Picture 1 (cartoon, one colour):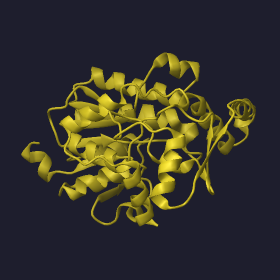
Picture 2 (cartoon, one colour):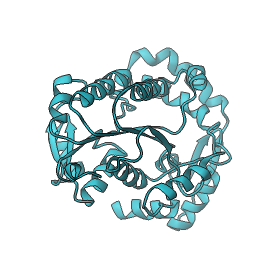
Picture 3 (cartoon, helix red, strand yellow):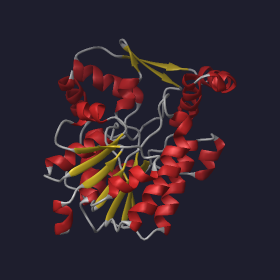
Picture 4 (cartoon, one colour):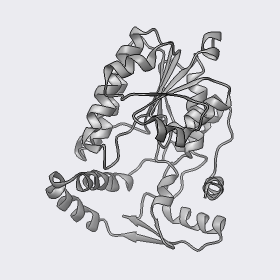
Length: 310
């Protein structure tokens, strides 16, 4: 890391999101000035506290992007529009606006940029399941490769949050049952790795897969969460025919409201989840240990962290 970056702010776009807030936390813990662009300063303060610089604006506004980039030496892009409120603007937010950020960052002479992407991008799979999110991430990665920026892409698997999101009461309900083993990662680890990556200059032009200590199946996750919490979590697999039917129905009704539109897109990922590749997860995790200085978060550690937040 050069001296300039030690004393000038780093911009985190998506800084209040699932991964972004942990990226901000890790950077602040290193004594690094951090700037966050947010549509709502009050809400951002509730998430991030008082230490980060928060400026009001929207990533879809070029003037906001230009203002946010003033005086920064590095950028982490961790934006997501995958929510009922924003899903219809996914391409605008995750592709068009991010391409604007890349263009303006290069003009501004930003010396380092880290882009949070997805674990693996296979265009044939994205087109088969009509996965708009994968296609927009690929478009951004292509633009990065053609740019003059010193960039690094971090490809994240599902967050460990996916295991907890499937729990209803005392049962983990999983459409299709999930893959034999699923690479996941704690958002805390993503935050630390991304923070270290943007502070380094020796990772330029690299796409790095992220992965936790080990791939875990959903039945195994249910058993381990049970042991960690002392509360019995049963596992139940739902036949894939049910989400497939639901996907067709929501596809017909999606134009009616944002919730149905979001549900339809979520159901596209259900079938893909059951085919998620785990073959290179161990190698990816070892590469992280060789490249970054951090203590990996196990599922049991993630359980404890969540309990401490309650």
